[in-house]
Length: 490
Image (cartoon, rainbow, N blue to C red; front, side, top):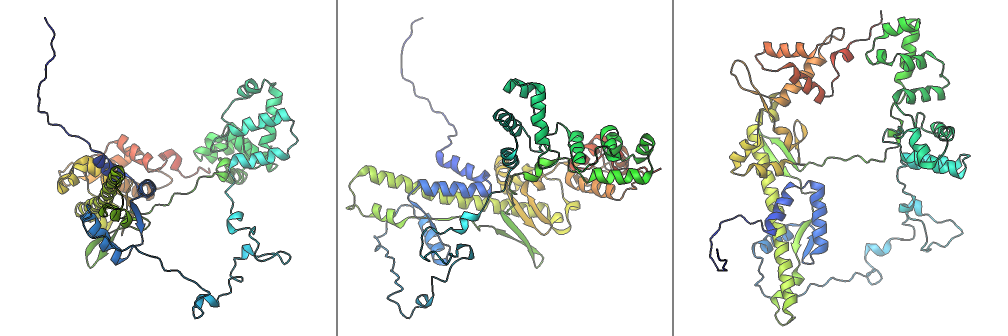
Protein backbone atom coordinates (compact mmCIF):
# COMPACT_ATOMS: atom_id res chain seq x y z
CA UNK A 1 0.00 0.00 0.00
CA UNK A 2 1.44 3.37 -1.03
CA UNK A 3 1.79 6.17 1.49
CA UNK A 4 0.81 9.70 0.53
CA UNK A 5 0.49 13.14 2.16
CA UNK A 6 -2.67 15.15 1.73
CA UNK A 7 -4.54 17.97 3.49
CA UNK A 8 -7.92 17.43 5.06
CA UNK A 9 -10.38 19.84 6.76
CA UNK A 10 -12.13 18.74 9.93
CA UNK A 11 -14.63 20.58 12.15
CA UNK A 12 -14.19 19.72 15.85
CA UNK A 13 -16.05 21.15 18.84
CA UNK A 14 -14.06 21.18 22.08
CA UNK A 15 -13.84 23.09 25.33
CA UNK A 16 -10.72 25.24 25.66
CA UNK A 17 -9.59 26.53 29.05
CA UNK A 18 -8.37 30.05 28.40
CA UNK A 19 -5.88 31.61 30.81
CA UNK A 20 -8.60 34.02 31.97
CA UNK A 21 -10.98 31.16 32.75
CA UNK A 22 -8.25 29.29 34.59
CA UNK A 23 -7.57 32.39 36.67
CA UNK A 24 -11.26 32.79 37.53
CA UNK A 25 -11.49 29.16 38.65
CA UNK A 26 -8.35 29.54 40.73
CA UNK A 27 -9.65 32.66 42.48
CA UNK A 28 -12.94 30.94 43.21
CA UNK A 29 -11.38 28.17 45.31
CA UNK A 30 -8.84 30.31 47.18
CA UNK A 31 -9.25 30.99 50.87
CA UNK A 32 -9.34 34.53 52.13
CA UNK A 33 -5.65 34.64 53.08
CA UNK A 34 -4.59 33.07 49.78
CA UNK A 35 -6.73 35.55 47.86
CA UNK A 36 -5.05 38.51 49.57
CA UNK A 37 -1.63 37.03 48.80
CA UNK A 38 -2.58 36.43 45.16
CA UNK A 39 -3.84 39.99 44.76
CA UNK A 40 -0.63 41.39 46.23
CA UNK A 41 1.41 39.31 43.78
CA UNK A 42 -0.67 40.60 40.87
CA UNK A 43 -0.14 44.19 42.02
CA UNK A 44 3.61 43.63 42.08
CA UNK A 45 3.68 41.97 38.65
CA UNK A 46 1.14 44.14 36.81
CA UNK A 47 2.03 47.88 36.72
CA UNK A 48 -1.46 48.75 35.49
CA UNK A 49 -3.04 47.55 38.75
CA UNK A 50 -3.23 49.96 41.68
CA UNK A 51 -4.67 49.72 45.17
CA UNK A 52 -7.03 52.45 46.25
CA UNK A 53 -8.61 53.67 49.44
CA UNK A 54 -12.31 52.89 49.53
CA UNK A 55 -14.48 56.01 49.14
CA UNK A 56 -17.82 56.51 47.36
CA UNK A 57 -16.09 58.49 44.61
CA UNK A 58 -13.44 55.87 43.96
CA UNK A 59 -16.03 53.10 43.92
CA UNK A 60 -17.91 54.86 41.11
CA UNK A 61 -14.66 55.40 39.22
CA UNK A 62 -13.71 51.75 39.54
CA UNK A 63 -17.11 50.68 38.26
CA UNK A 64 -16.82 52.91 35.21
CA UNK A 65 -13.31 51.64 34.50
CA UNK A 66 -14.41 48.02 34.57
CA UNK A 67 -17.38 48.60 32.32
CA UNK A 68 -15.16 50.34 29.77
CA UNK A 69 -11.84 48.54 29.55
CA UNK A 70 -10.96 50.18 26.26
CA UNK A 71 -10.21 53.84 27.10
CA UNK A 72 -11.75 56.26 24.63
CA UNK A 73 -12.09 59.40 26.75
CA UNK A 74 -10.00 62.50 26.39
CA UNK A 75 -6.77 62.58 28.30
CA UNK A 76 -7.24 64.04 31.74
CA UNK A 77 -4.83 66.48 33.23
CA UNK A 78 -2.12 64.81 35.28
CA UNK A 79 -2.79 64.87 38.97
CA UNK A 80 -0.37 66.72 41.22
CA UNK A 81 0.20 66.20 44.88
CA UNK A 82 0.20 69.40 46.87
CA UNK A 83 3.28 69.95 48.97
CA UNK A 84 2.84 70.40 52.68
CA UNK A 85 5.31 72.56 54.53
CA UNK A 86 5.10 73.01 58.29
CA UNK A 87 7.54 75.93 58.29
CA UNK A 88 5.44 77.90 55.78
CA UNK A 89 2.19 77.28 57.67
CA UNK A 90 2.53 79.14 60.99
CA UNK A 91 -1.16 78.77 61.72
CA UNK A 92 -1.08 75.02 61.27
CA UNK A 93 -1.55 72.90 64.37
CA UNK A 94 1.33 70.69 63.18
CA UNK A 95 3.81 73.49 63.84
CA UNK A 96 2.78 73.62 67.49
CA UNK A 97 3.83 70.01 68.15
CA UNK A 98 7.16 69.45 69.86
CA UNK A 99 8.32 66.51 67.79
CA UNK A 100 11.37 65.91 69.99
CA UNK A 101 9.11 65.04 72.91
CA UNK A 102 6.96 62.80 70.72
CA UNK A 103 8.95 59.58 71.20
CA UNK A 104 8.09 56.09 72.22
CA UNK A 105 9.08 55.08 75.74
CA UNK A 106 11.28 52.31 74.30
CA UNK A 107 13.12 54.87 72.19
CA UNK A 108 13.95 57.28 75.04
CA UNK A 109 17.57 58.40 74.91
CA UNK A 110 20.05 58.28 77.76
CA UNK A 111 21.01 61.71 79.04
CA UNK A 112 24.57 61.39 77.78
CA UNK A 113 23.54 60.83 74.14
CA UNK A 114 22.22 63.43 71.70
CA UNK A 115 18.46 63.31 71.02
CA UNK A 116 18.88 63.30 67.25
CA UNK A 117 21.08 60.21 67.10
CA UNK A 118 19.99 58.09 64.16
CA UNK A 119 21.27 54.84 65.74
CA UNK A 120 18.61 54.75 68.44
CA UNK A 121 17.00 51.35 69.08
CA UNK A 122 13.55 51.03 67.60
CA UNK A 123 10.66 49.23 69.20
CA UNK A 124 11.12 46.57 66.53
CA UNK A 125 14.56 45.79 67.95
CA UNK A 126 13.09 44.47 71.21
CA UNK A 127 10.48 42.22 69.62
CA UNK A 128 11.44 38.57 70.02
CA UNK A 129 10.29 35.34 68.45
CA UNK A 130 8.98 32.61 70.71
CA UNK A 131 11.77 30.15 71.55
CA UNK A 132 11.21 26.71 70.05
CA UNK A 133 12.23 23.42 71.66
CA UNK A 134 15.45 22.92 69.69
CA UNK A 135 16.68 26.45 70.42
CA UNK A 136 15.87 26.09 74.11
CA UNK A 137 17.78 22.82 74.40
CA UNK A 138 20.70 24.08 72.30
CA UNK A 139 21.06 27.01 74.70
CA UNK A 140 21.34 24.53 77.60
CA UNK A 141 23.82 22.37 75.70
CA UNK A 142 26.11 25.37 75.27
CA UNK A 143 26.32 25.70 79.06
CA UNK A 144 26.71 21.98 79.72
CA UNK A 145 30.06 20.31 80.34
CA UNK A 146 30.22 18.54 76.97
CA UNK A 147 33.22 17.64 74.87
CA UNK A 148 33.13 18.51 71.19
CA UNK A 149 32.16 14.97 70.29
CA UNK A 150 29.42 14.91 72.93
CA UNK A 151 28.13 18.25 71.64
CA UNK A 152 27.78 16.79 68.17
CA UNK A 153 25.88 13.80 69.57
CA UNK A 154 23.68 16.13 71.64
CA UNK A 155 22.82 18.20 68.56
CA UNK A 156 21.91 15.00 66.71
CA UNK A 157 19.64 13.96 69.58
CA UNK A 158 17.99 17.40 69.73
CA UNK A 159 17.42 17.36 66.00
CA UNK A 160 15.58 14.04 66.28
CA UNK A 161 13.03 15.11 68.89
CA UNK A 162 9.47 15.17 67.61
CA UNK A 163 6.71 17.68 68.26
CA UNK A 164 5.91 16.10 71.65
CA UNK A 165 9.55 16.07 72.74
CA UNK A 166 10.08 12.31 72.34
CA UNK A 167 13.27 10.83 70.88
CA UNK A 168 12.52 9.37 67.45
CA UNK A 169 15.79 7.44 66.99
CA UNK A 170 17.18 4.38 68.72
CA UNK A 171 20.46 4.32 70.61
CA UNK A 172 21.86 2.03 67.91
CA UNK A 173 21.25 4.72 65.26
CA UNK A 174 23.13 7.29 67.36
CA UNK A 175 26.03 4.86 67.77
CA UNK A 176 26.11 4.18 64.04
CA UNK A 177 25.91 7.88 63.10
CA UNK A 178 28.85 8.91 65.32
CA UNK A 179 30.70 5.60 65.69
CA UNK A 180 30.58 5.83 69.46
CA UNK A 181 30.05 3.29 72.22
CA UNK A 182 26.64 2.60 73.71
CA UNK A 183 27.58 4.03 77.13
CA UNK A 184 28.71 7.29 75.48
CA UNK A 185 25.42 7.66 73.56
CA UNK A 186 23.38 6.77 76.64
CA UNK A 187 25.30 9.30 78.71
CA UNK A 188 24.51 12.15 76.30
CA UNK A 189 20.83 11.18 76.11
CA UNK A 190 20.73 10.97 79.90
CA UNK A 191 22.19 14.47 80.27
CA UNK A 192 19.65 15.88 77.83
CA UNK A 193 16.88 14.17 79.81
CA UNK A 194 18.04 16.16 82.84
CA UNK A 195 17.46 19.43 81.00
CA UNK A 196 14.36 21.59 80.87
CA UNK A 197 11.50 20.79 80.28
CA UNK A 198 11.25 17.71 82.51
CA UNK A 199 10.54 14.50 80.62
CA UNK A 200 12.30 15.57 77.44
CA UNK A 201 14.04 13.06 75.13
CA UNK A 202 12.04 10.10 76.46
CA UNK A 203 11.32 7.13 74.21
CA UNK A 204 7.67 6.71 75.27
CA UNK A 205 5.04 8.13 77.62
CA UNK A 206 5.86 5.92 80.66
CA UNK A 207 9.54 6.89 80.50
CA UNK A 208 8.52 10.55 80.14
CA UNK A 209 6.34 10.35 83.26
CA UNK A 210 9.03 8.51 85.22
CA UNK A 211 11.60 11.18 84.32
CA UNK A 212 9.27 13.85 85.67
CA UNK A 213 8.63 11.90 88.85
CA UNK A 214 12.37 11.45 89.31
CA UNK A 215 12.81 15.23 88.95
CA UNK A 216 10.24 15.64 91.76
CA UNK A 217 12.10 13.17 93.96
CA UNK A 218 9.36 10.54 93.61
CA UNK A 219 11.31 7.86 91.74
CA UNK A 220 10.49 5.22 94.39
CA UNK A 221 6.97 6.44 95.18
CA UNK A 222 3.61 4.76 94.67
CA UNK A 223 2.98 7.08 91.71
CA UNK A 224 6.11 5.73 89.99
CA UNK A 225 5.03 2.14 90.70
CA UNK A 226 1.63 2.83 89.11
CA UNK A 227 3.25 4.30 85.99
CA UNK A 228 5.77 1.48 85.79
CA UNK A 229 3.48 -1.51 86.38
CA UNK A 230 -0.21 -0.55 86.40
CA UNK A 231 -0.67 2.07 83.70
CA UNK A 232 -3.38 -0.07 82.06
CA UNK A 233 -5.52 0.13 85.20
CA UNK A 234 -4.98 3.88 85.31
CA UNK A 235 -6.18 4.25 81.71
CA UNK A 236 -9.49 2.51 82.54
CA UNK A 237 -9.75 4.28 85.94
CA UNK A 238 -9.84 0.91 87.68
CA UNK A 239 -8.52 2.21 91.00
CA UNK A 240 -9.78 -0.82 92.89
CA UNK A 241 -7.44 -3.05 90.87
CA UNK A 242 -4.52 -0.72 91.67
CA UNK A 243 -5.38 -0.94 95.39
CA UNK A 244 -5.32 -4.74 95.23
CA UNK A 245 -2.15 -4.91 93.13
CA UNK A 246 -0.10 -2.45 95.21
CA UNK A 247 -1.56 -3.43 98.63
CA UNK A 248 -2.08 0.27 99.34
CA UNK A 249 -4.98 2.17 100.81
CA UNK A 250 -7.52 3.87 98.58
CA UNK A 251 -6.49 7.31 99.84
CA UNK A 252 -2.85 6.66 98.98
CA UNK A 253 -3.78 5.43 95.49
CA UNK A 254 -5.98 8.47 94.82
CA UNK A 255 -3.19 10.78 95.99
CA UNK A 256 -0.68 9.02 93.71
CA UNK A 257 -3.11 9.17 90.79
CA UNK A 258 -3.50 12.92 91.29
CA UNK A 259 0.28 13.27 91.06
CA UNK A 260 0.43 11.28 87.83
CA UNK A 261 -2.49 13.15 86.29
CA UNK A 262 -0.70 16.43 87.03
CA UNK A 263 2.32 15.44 84.90
CA UNK A 264 2.77 16.48 81.27
CA UNK A 265 2.86 13.53 78.83
CA UNK A 266 3.85 15.87 75.97
CA UNK A 267 6.61 18.15 77.35
CA UNK A 268 7.74 19.38 73.93
CA UNK A 269 4.46 21.12 73.17
CA UNK A 270 5.23 23.83 75.72
CA UNK A 271 7.84 25.22 73.30
CA UNK A 272 5.82 24.78 70.14
CA UNK A 273 6.49 27.64 67.71
CA UNK A 274 3.20 27.16 65.85
CA UNK A 275 1.18 30.35 65.72
CA UNK A 276 -2.60 30.12 66.15
CA UNK A 277 -4.56 30.55 62.94
CA UNK A 278 -7.56 32.77 63.56
CA UNK A 279 -10.60 32.31 61.34
CA UNK A 280 -11.86 35.43 59.59
CA UNK A 281 -15.36 34.86 58.18
CA UNK A 282 -15.85 35.53 54.49
CA UNK A 283 -19.56 36.18 55.00
CA UNK A 284 -21.69 37.48 57.86
CA UNK A 285 -25.35 36.48 58.23
CA UNK A 286 -27.55 38.59 60.53
CA UNK A 287 -31.22 38.29 61.36
CA UNK A 288 -33.01 41.61 60.94
CA UNK A 289 -36.80 41.87 61.41
CA UNK A 290 -37.32 38.17 60.78
CA UNK A 291 -35.23 38.08 57.60
CA UNK A 292 -31.60 37.11 57.15
CA UNK A 293 -29.20 39.70 55.76
CA UNK A 294 -25.98 38.61 54.03
CA UNK A 295 -22.92 40.83 54.25
CA UNK A 296 -19.70 39.97 52.42
CA UNK A 297 -16.56 40.67 54.44
CA UNK A 298 -14.33 42.85 52.27
CA UNK A 299 -12.16 44.09 55.14
CA UNK A 300 -8.50 43.47 54.41
CA UNK A 301 -9.06 42.75 50.71
CA UNK A 302 -7.15 45.23 48.53
CA UNK A 303 -9.46 47.33 46.38
CA UNK A 304 -8.07 47.41 42.86
CA UNK A 305 -8.32 49.96 40.09
CA UNK A 306 -6.72 50.51 36.71
CA UNK A 307 -3.91 53.06 36.68
CA UNK A 308 -4.97 56.29 34.99
CA UNK A 309 -1.35 56.92 33.99
CA UNK A 310 -1.21 53.88 31.70
CA UNK A 311 -4.69 54.55 30.34
CA UNK A 312 -3.49 58.02 29.35
CA UNK A 313 -0.51 56.51 27.54
CA UNK A 314 -2.85 54.46 25.39
CA UNK A 315 -5.08 57.44 24.71
CA UNK A 316 -2.17 59.71 23.78
CA UNK A 317 -0.93 58.32 20.49
CA UNK A 318 1.91 60.85 20.19
CA UNK A 319 3.47 60.01 23.56
CA UNK A 320 5.07 56.81 22.35
CA UNK A 321 5.44 55.27 18.94
CA UNK A 322 6.82 51.92 20.09
CA UNK A 323 4.16 49.30 19.19
CA UNK A 324 5.69 46.76 21.59
CA UNK A 325 5.21 49.15 24.50
CA UNK A 326 1.58 49.78 23.60
CA UNK A 327 0.92 46.08 23.12
CA UNK A 328 2.47 45.36 26.51
CA UNK A 329 0.33 47.99 28.22
CA UNK A 330 -2.77 46.79 26.38
CA UNK A 331 -2.20 43.20 27.52
CA UNK A 332 -1.61 44.27 31.10
CA UNK A 333 -4.71 46.45 30.98
CA UNK A 334 -6.88 43.55 29.81
CA UNK A 335 -5.33 41.31 32.47
CA UNK A 336 -6.04 43.90 35.18
CA UNK A 337 -9.65 44.36 34.11
CA UNK A 338 -10.21 40.61 33.98
CA UNK A 339 -8.73 40.17 37.46
CA UNK A 340 -11.05 42.81 38.90
CA UNK A 341 -14.03 41.23 37.18
CA UNK A 342 -13.03 37.76 38.42
CA UNK A 343 -12.80 38.96 42.03
CA UNK A 344 -16.21 40.60 41.77
CA UNK A 345 -17.66 37.46 40.20
CA UNK A 346 -16.16 35.40 43.03
CA UNK A 347 -17.85 37.59 45.63
CA UNK A 348 -21.19 37.43 43.82
CA UNK A 349 -20.98 33.64 43.60
CA UNK A 350 -20.23 33.32 47.33
CA UNK A 351 -23.20 35.57 48.07
CA UNK A 352 -25.56 33.45 45.95
CA UNK A 353 -24.34 30.19 47.51
CA UNK A 354 -24.88 31.52 51.05
CA UNK A 355 -28.31 32.78 50.00
CA UNK A 356 -29.18 29.28 48.77
CA UNK A 357 -27.84 27.69 51.98
CA UNK A 358 -30.10 29.93 54.06
CA UNK A 359 -33.07 28.76 51.99
CA UNK A 360 -32.22 25.06 52.46
CA UNK A 361 -31.01 25.26 56.07
CA UNK A 362 -33.34 27.84 57.55
CA UNK A 363 -34.14 25.50 60.43
CA UNK A 364 -30.46 25.51 61.42
CA UNK A 365 -30.25 29.31 61.33
CA UNK A 366 -33.38 29.51 63.48
CA UNK A 367 -32.91 26.70 66.02
CA UNK A 368 -29.39 25.22 65.77
CA UNK A 369 -27.51 22.09 64.75
CA UNK A 370 -30.27 19.68 65.74
CA UNK A 371 -32.39 21.05 62.88
CA UNK A 372 -29.74 20.75 60.16
CA UNK A 373 -31.19 19.10 57.06
CA UNK A 374 -29.46 16.59 54.78
CA UNK A 375 -27.93 18.50 51.88
CA UNK A 376 -25.61 17.66 48.99
CA UNK A 377 -23.78 19.81 46.46
CA UNK A 378 -26.20 18.86 43.70
CA UNK A 379 -29.12 20.48 45.55
CA UNK A 380 -27.43 23.88 45.67
CA UNK A 381 -26.02 23.48 42.16
CA UNK A 382 -29.49 22.86 40.72
CA UNK A 383 -30.95 25.72 42.71
CA UNK A 384 -28.38 28.18 41.33
CA UNK A 385 -28.08 26.58 37.90
CA UNK A 386 -24.36 25.96 38.41
CA UNK A 387 -22.08 22.94 38.20
CA UNK A 388 -21.37 20.88 41.30
CA UNK A 389 -17.62 21.51 40.94
CA UNK A 390 -18.28 25.26 41.13
CA UNK A 391 -20.24 24.85 44.37
CA UNK A 392 -17.45 22.64 45.73
CA UNK A 393 -14.84 25.30 44.96
CA UNK A 394 -16.91 28.08 46.49
CA UNK A 395 -17.52 26.20 49.75
CA UNK A 396 -13.89 25.12 50.24
CA UNK A 397 -11.95 27.11 52.86
CA UNK A 398 -14.75 29.68 53.21
CA UNK A 399 -16.35 30.53 56.55
CA UNK A 400 -19.65 32.14 57.46
CA UNK A 401 -20.60 33.81 60.72
CA UNK A 402 -24.18 32.94 61.68
CA UNK A 403 -26.41 33.48 64.75
CA UNK A 404 -25.46 29.89 65.70
CA UNK A 405 -21.69 30.47 65.42
CA UNK A 406 -18.96 30.46 62.78
CA UNK A 407 -18.88 27.48 60.41
CA UNK A 408 -17.17 26.43 57.21
CA UNK A 409 -19.52 26.40 54.24
CA UNK A 410 -18.78 22.69 53.82
CA UNK A 411 -20.41 22.17 57.22
CA UNK A 412 -23.90 22.62 55.75
CA UNK A 413 -23.47 19.64 53.41
CA UNK A 414 -23.95 16.25 55.05
CA UNK A 415 -25.33 12.81 54.34
CA UNK A 416 -28.83 11.63 55.20
CA UNK A 417 -29.90 9.11 57.84
CA UNK A 418 -33.16 7.46 56.87
CA UNK A 419 -36.08 6.87 59.23
CA UNK A 420 -37.82 3.52 59.48
CA UNK A 421 -41.27 5.11 59.42
CA UNK A 422 -40.53 6.90 56.16
CA UNK A 423 -40.42 10.34 57.76
CA UNK A 424 -38.04 13.16 56.91
CA UNK A 425 -34.43 12.02 56.84
CA UNK A 426 -31.99 13.44 59.39
CA UNK A 427 -28.57 14.88 58.68
CA UNK A 428 -25.45 13.13 59.94
CA UNK A 429 -24.42 16.31 61.76
CA UNK A 430 -27.64 16.44 63.77
CA UNK A 431 -27.21 12.74 64.58
CA UNK A 432 -23.72 13.46 65.95
CA UNK A 433 -25.14 16.25 68.08
CA UNK A 434 -27.77 13.84 69.38
CA UNK A 435 -25.10 11.24 70.25
CA UNK A 436 -23.15 13.89 72.14
CA UNK A 437 -26.22 14.85 74.19
CA UNK A 438 -27.09 11.20 74.93
CA UNK A 439 -23.59 10.49 76.26
CA UNK A 440 -23.59 13.74 78.27
CA UNK A 441 -26.74 12.57 80.12
CA UNK A 442 -25.64 8.95 80.70
CA UNK A 443 -25.04 7.36 84.08
CA UNK A 444 -21.27 7.33 84.63
CA UNK A 445 -21.53 4.19 86.76
CA UNK A 446 -22.98 2.37 83.71
CA UNK A 447 -21.96 4.28 80.55
CA UNK A 448 -23.85 3.47 77.38
CA UNK A 449 -22.21 1.18 74.86
CA UNK A 450 -22.35 1.85 71.12
CA UNK A 451 -24.90 -0.94 70.73
CA UNK A 452 -27.12 0.59 73.42
CA UNK A 453 -27.01 3.99 71.72
CA UNK A 454 -27.91 2.29 68.44
CA UNK A 455 -30.97 0.74 70.15
CA UNK A 456 -32.01 4.18 71.45
CA UNK A 457 -32.08 5.47 67.89
CA UNK A 458 -33.93 2.34 66.79
CA UNK A 459 -36.72 3.17 69.26
CA UNK A 460 -36.95 6.57 67.59
CA UNK A 461 -37.35 4.87 64.18
CA UNK A 462 -33.88 5.95 63.03
CA UNK A 463 -31.69 3.49 61.16
CA UNK A 464 -28.25 3.69 62.77
CA UNK A 465 -25.93 0.70 62.96
CA UNK A 466 -23.58 0.12 65.90
CA UNK A 467 -20.49 0.66 63.73
CA UNK A 468 -21.96 3.98 62.55
CA UNK A 469 -22.41 5.06 66.16
CA UNK A 470 -18.78 4.11 66.86
CA UNK A 471 -17.58 6.06 63.82
CA UNK A 472 -19.51 9.20 64.79
CA UNK A 473 -18.38 8.89 68.43
CA UNK A 474 -14.73 8.74 67.35
CA UNK A 475 -15.23 11.76 65.09
CA UNK A 476 -16.62 13.64 68.10
CA UNK A 477 -13.52 12.70 70.15
CA UNK A 478 -15.55 10.73 72.73
CA UNK A 479 -13.91 7.74 74.40
CA UNK A 480 -15.44 4.22 74.42
CA UNK A 481 -17.74 3.28 77.30
CA UNK A 482 -15.02 1.46 79.29
CA UNK A 483 -12.95 4.67 79.46
CA UNK A 484 -15.97 6.81 80.36
CA UNK A 485 -16.85 4.66 83.33
CA UNK A 486 -16.69 6.21 86.79
CA UNK A 487 -13.56 5.10 88.69
CA UNK A 488 -13.90 1.90 90.71
CA UNK A 489 -13.09 2.70 94.32
CA UNK A 490 -14.24 -0.52 95.98
